[in-house]
Length: 345
Image 1 (tube, rainbow, N blue to C red):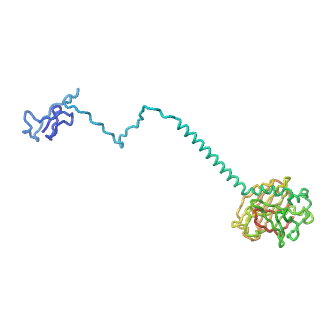
Image 2: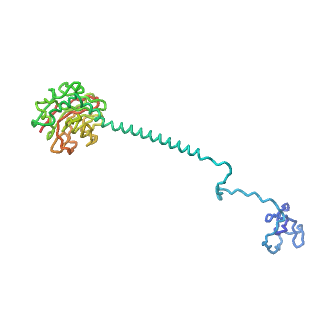
Image 3: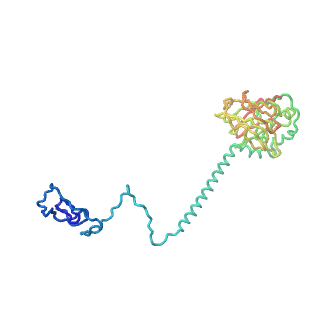
């Protein structure tokens, strides 16, 4: 058995050389003058009185301090303290250049985005209001509609009832009427790509132009799509219609679309520009394809009521207190045929 000569701690391992408590060299243990060879480990040991720890005992064995163990981050993470390093300071120039480049790239991106939005906005605005742009030019010069406007300002007293089965030429035809023509007792019209065309009757229609006045009248006409492909912006009746000073359409339009999803629209034309009063609304009352539909507008006071095939669809209020004539309307290049117009008061 070995024993520390400083703290008197005993160690059973005779091969141990130094004290684990204070690092002092161990010696062969003896108790009360008895050598360790006669020492009985089972005997009761008498411990020396406690040593004085102030001042601390002097180490008899001097060694280099053990290397400090790195603390495990799971329980004692060392704070990440930035260290100051000597040497050449990093220049701010690359950061400034990078910031300028970033601003330039961002500016270019914004310009491109605004350009795309502008194009989309233009395309979107051209889809429905395209009826406006071309028609302005369509009604200038030798346009028959403008020419027919001579007697449209002073509305004469109309007859009680008018029936036009399109057997007589009361509506414009030929190149000046954008290719409109009569065939088999029907009046045929075509529009233009992304444009609309409207027609008013000739000044000599039925003897008096006032016979086609729509104020206080019930107006009916039968219309069909000839090739089975409905004009994209619809076709139908113009009421309280006239040509403005600039040759543009004024009045109300009751239009139908006879594609795979039949629907109707009510618009007001102001200087050729359509303002939606009732947006495109689906209706099972409208027949699709090449089937004929009877389009009807009833004018009573300031109220305009819309019917299709004898069934009520919608009523609106004529806030402009407009007066004018019955007209026909179509759009795009799909051929439409009108027949059996009736104006009843």
